[in-house]
Length: 264
Ligand SMILES: N[C@@H](CCC(=O)N[C@@H](CS)C(=O)NCC(=O)O)C(=O)O
Image (tube, rainbow, N blue to C red; front, side, top):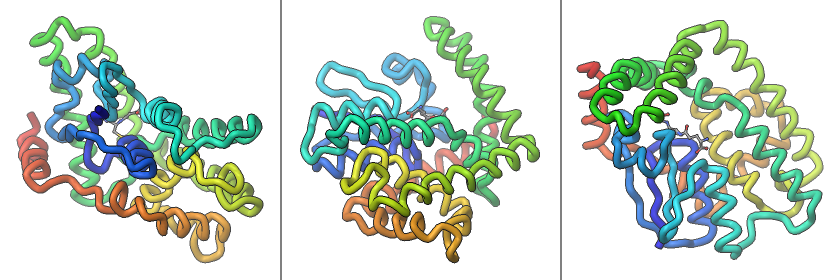
């Protein structure tokens, strides 16, 4: 039995949902509301001490971190395979996944969303900063997790409020996409002729960058191979279910909005 703890519109959750769909696996979902901080509940921290989604539970085994989860799924359920067999292509796949994983997408998202959405996201980080000391007092058995989270949230909050830092992170997006373009001029998928975990990861990221209005970086002839690649990714049968139609259910959104407006 596969169980996935995930959140709506979470980039890391989308990668896992796409792999589950590609492999046509049945799974039971536990949808967490990040806007009401369900990810910081002690019951969830017991599974995922960092208090982030996603978490996969397979029978008794708990796996955290989206990259580890998708690799685990591919090893455990090898059909269809999403890892190339040639060692040099496996290495290439790791490189594409590391490039993505090391890029501060969280800061890109929280720093660039505009309007109400941006306000909600940035305010949720401020509320988290106020909430964590209270949680430390209420649940001292999770003190280490909450302390680490608070340290991370303080850094996160100061980064997304600093327009210059966000602008300098944004400037790194184009060179990263140029690396993809160089590869995709030569091959259909990032690791050659077969769709792989690297393509899964970049499906979620390119989609998010487009949502954040960075799509011009590859459109209008700027990166034609990347633009064509993104069209191929979006045309795949599982894109819609795993990524495009990923929206927070209305009751969850309303609960999140209340919490955000009240600021507690
Ligand atoms: N490296 C982790 C990052 C997980 C992560 O940051 N998840 C986000 C959603 S995409 C989250 O849970 N954010 C809530 C928080 O940090 O409080 C992974 O790939 O799974």
